[in-house]
Length: 408
Image 1 (cartoon, rainbow, N blue to C red):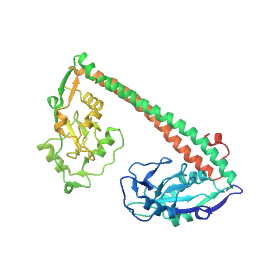
Image 2: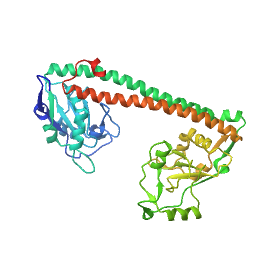
Image 3: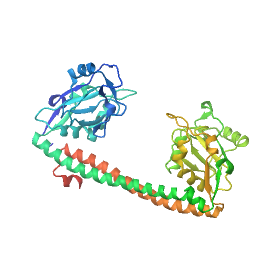
Image 4: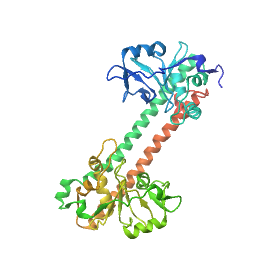
């Protein structure tokens, strides 16, 4: 540790408190009651915040009043997300740790320390609770911090501010490039399946039930699951496969049950298409090999017998209008897409399968290039996150000298 630094317990340096332990009555309007869930992205998030009466606000603040310069820290759920209070607060707190900052300490030094990976990792590991993790007030008071003199704290904060501003700018550029790459493909896709364009080209337009069969699977009950056998897919597996991710198999049915279904009802085969229809809607998988599997009824819709369509053309046509398809879904909290509504959905297509294939090949090429760019930009974003964690680690081991060295 650097000369002049000390190891101190947080409770010996800061006045560490927490919010109310009571459950005040919530009202439609009043004073906000901030909880751990309202600390997000270096700021207070008032989405789904609860409100309390003025008297409850006064009672809570007798013990845990928040002032400008104080640091708040989530004690329950996602441990961490420290924020510095910049404006005069008009809220009370619950399930939130409050660090009152003395004059000889820097608020942002503590904030950065509490945000460092080593702290979050250790607290998350030490946190108690089976269903919801939490750290107690006593634990926080006894947690240690490497503490330099105030001028050194302020120097480190200035370096971190400058370095993180540069990282934030680079990350914003990478995220925008990522959006642009996705938007480019989406724009081209929408252009291909634009109704006015297809009409000018003389394409046919038909409801999906005029072109093939849309169905689901035979119901499989939990009692029919086995430890080994034919893989059984749900939305999770379809999503993994449709995004070319390694599949994590968890459920199986017996080979005998699979063969019984195959004989009496049929199973997906090469040239069929599956689409998620519950929850995460619009994940699409084209069957391209003869590997045996079965899938969950209701959750996944099965397209088969679309002889007049190249199946990958159908995939792109459905992808192009996936947002519109989602709007057909019933249910607000639990979205589901019915076969009945899908049957009435219209798509346009050229009569020639050769022309359909040409369109598919162009879209495949653009999709591959888009995914390549997405990989590059996503890696850049991930690398910047790693760099930020590395800089914080250096800062609290006394290795940070200048902002240029920090981002080097």
